[in-house]
Length: 212
Image (cartoon, rainbow, N blue to C red; front, side):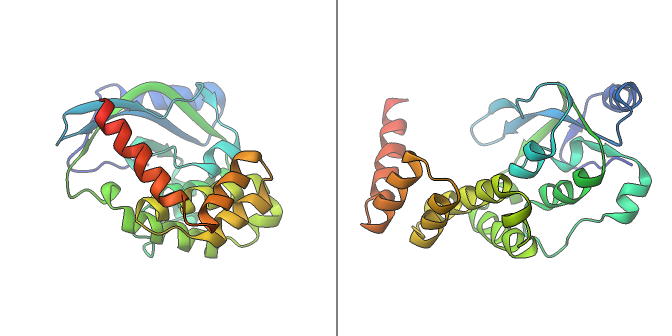
């Protein structure tokens, strides 16, 4: 089974290449890179940047790598593992967190889908991203013990999304440092605690815009 969005485009050989990859690597799920086309800015970039072949669980569970319209999988997997309608965003990421635990996942590095990001696309809503990470963290509390590296990446992305939304959550940066005691995380926690992280990030983004 494969899925497609009404405003995106599959390349003519997408299914053929994915079926070939599934058979070649004896995999259960295959996803491919895609061309992300931002309609407003007319910019195009390929995503994700991963080595072709079987993808480790840590990589798939740590970051949102596979967009729904790039995935093809055996029917029984979708029968047993469905998308969670409670999530406002990251439904494909949440599905992969569960599906990749028990199944072999292959990746094709060639972009075989053109994904058009409109101004009203779900993927542009930071508010929905924040809510999605909150739900995922509550949904899989066992991950903190079972796979601390994955849990740490979720905390990192949740804190980052909140910061971009205007909220500096000190407790999240504290948790990030507790989970991964790096100098960078210590600095982030200290800056968040004294109220400097938010203006620092704002300054960095403003400087980047000016330098373009």
